[in-house]
Length: 341
Image (cartoon, rainbow, N blue to C red; front, top):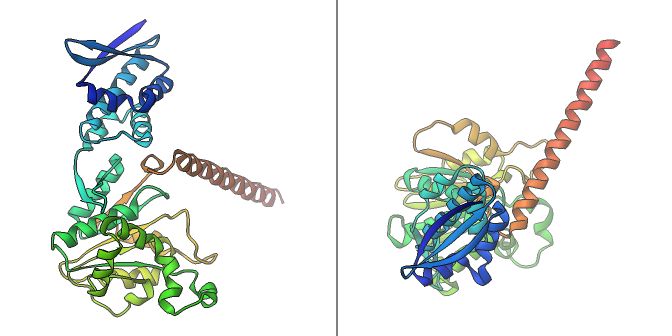
């Protein structure tokens, strides 16, 4: 029987690490096939980790240690945080967890701090800070848009920029907008709703409306960016996978002095017509290696929504790879048949 003891600190810290009904510790026990018991020695709480496999005990100890470090700056350890620590330890990337810290981007209207929850998110935020243009590419639920909006709000509050400009391609406009009631703004609002939601959470509806009236915040379809030069602005292009190469070039050349731009998108969810190339895919290839431009790729590990979202993303990836192998196999069979003839 292998055993290892980890000190946790005061009782409040221990409760935070263990989670409601010891759910966090139970998750670690299940993941590494170990037993974890609470221990109190010299007025300091700790845990005793026991198991048959030494490597499993060591991994569980690392997971508990990193949860302890995270509990020092998080009031509540979410299920997602616990799963993330377990996944990183299992993947042998636990040292990357040390990059996470108590860096608050900004506060929501309810006083909740917005922070990077994964290593990928932390590196994305750092890339936005250091570069004039940042591409955030990855699956749904990784916080690409939300964190970009948080950085924009922070820049506006600190007077680093004079306005925030948020834009999206209204790819469905040609078919569906005409059937919606109201004026043009009413018609495009459904496509910009995720941007509104993020701003409401960080600024509150009333404060947001004031900024909108003063034109320090602007939300508009991508087509409205043509012909403009955007100085002293924090500009976000969301759902950029639905922009054509021409639209992407048009947007990127709008960038003015003292401005910063973030382009976000998911290349696996392109809604462009069949055969139409994505401007995001081409831009990433064309602009790679240029100074002051960062290209950050998220993975399924950075998903901070319900745990099923991560499983769904992985399932679709497996399915698409199997379909691709099947198509390649069919092409090879046809080529072989032609050769025989």
